[in-house]
Length: 94
Image (cartoon, rainbow, N blue to C red; front, top):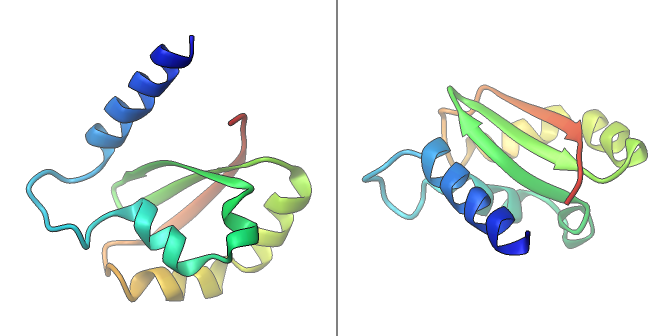
């Protein structure tokens, strides 16, 4: 099951990111540059579609905390790409 899960994640990442763009257009990389190491251990990049960045978090407490920081995080992420319109946090499994 781990192989299938890994393959699905790779396919989904390829489908949700733009083709033929430079390495600076990596939504997962933007998150790594915008969040602390502590926060990065509790999130998982899901998708980047139509300007919306989808992120799973591991707990409701983390969901609440990131929700409070959402505006500051959007400002930080827009430094990397003006395409980002919103961030959607959901509780999900890793």
